[in-house]
Image 1 (tube, one colour):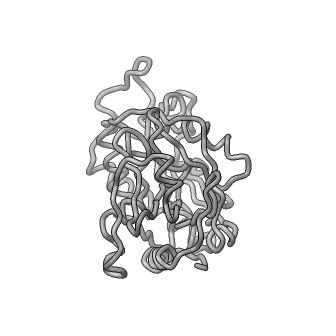
Image 2: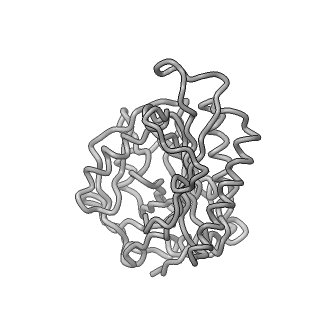
Image 3: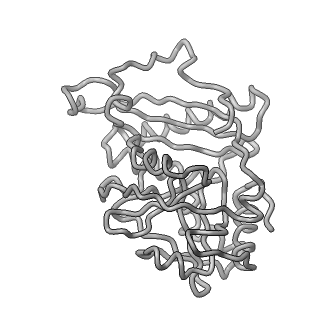
Amino acid sequence: MGALLYSSLEEESTSPLSLSNRGLAYGDGIFETIRVVQAKVPLLDYHRARFLRGVEVLSLGSSLELLEAFDDQLENAVRQLQLHGHENGLVKLIATRKEGGRGYAPIEPSSVDLFIQVFELPHYQESYYSSGIELALCSHRLSEQPMLAGIKHLNRLDQVMGARELNGAPEGVMLDQKNHVIEGTKSNLIALIDGTFYTPELSVCGIRGTLLSALLAGELEEFDGSFTIQERQMTLDDLHQADALLMINSVFGVWPVSQFQQSKYAPSTQVNKMMSTVKQRFGFDYEVA
């Protein structure tokens, strides 16, 4: 992330973070990392939807009240960004179940503490977009839990373990317990195979990124009616046989892959067109080869 500009923990009105906080003690909560462009959130609907699903899956409290609190906190975060002289930035919103309860069992009905951090937008090497990245393969396998699949809960040890293996690579592929391809350590994966874009099925593990959700919802069709993306189970063989690989998330946008293990991928008109369309539709700032 970029430099920290603001944290709600610095406010006198905010309760200090206790060692009994359930998010800290048990990972009992959810979070969203939200890119702001010109004081707007390009993927707002998808962040709200994933936040709401996390609230419902973890039974964190009233969906309506917490969605209103989400909106209020995000509005405050954008205001703080502007007070620091920025129109673009990154907001991290963390919702943790309030402390209390006996051991793992929480107090019912549950309530939530919301915290926000505001950062400058991170900057990535131009070559990641123009030339592509070398993609690593992580040996650590993702834990499988269908109930938690897709949401951005605070238990991110799988991603921590995977990221430790990157050894300087910008990103790495993570597999599930059955060796199916799932995602990157911080991004979703798209493969171009025989002219069609595919992305791994995320029914048992993995995070459904907001940019991926937007693409699956058909957000690019008004710009490019020929763009479609399909979900399916994928293997390492699929990646090696693909014409192109792309890593995507809501912060950096789209990174084409130049090499994965022994496989190399050449730039293509179809990939460049997709990258340009994503840039135009969601306000990313990168140059396409």
